[in-house]
Image (tube, rainbow, N blue to C red; front, side):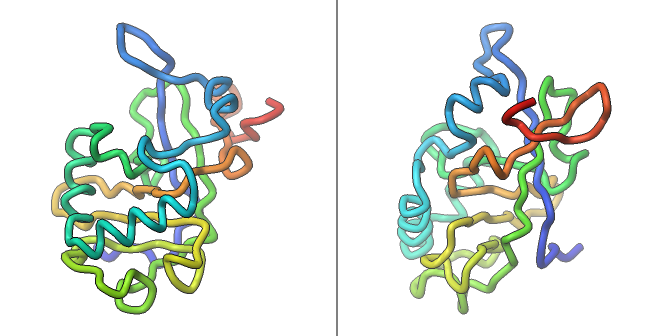
Length: 176
């Protein structure tokens, strides 16, 4: 099935800390200022990481390693589902992230000029090129896996809403 050219939302499920496993509550997410990858704290850092990993031919390896293990060593990404069902697996909290500004772009037209080994990666950005974008994400096109939108740029609180389980609808994360 072909990947969409545009997406409206992506979704991320999380639990609070329990059973010795780390976690995060909505209040902790607000304190942190939103979602961000382990290794990236700014748009410039995401642009630089994308350029370096794509030009040295290791971006797909990093994506694959992240999707398989979610290890901080490969922490250039925030994993999100491209559908609510893909992200919601009985998590305590379900977040909806507005990704409507991003569009699928070709590596030849919008990626780093020397990008190598990116054939299985779909690039999503909100500008004419990766280095002029404030939002960068990828989808790894792999057989038999649920497609994840792997966001490389920090996600602001204003772009994030929280599912109210009582009403079944999403509302603002801040001021709830």
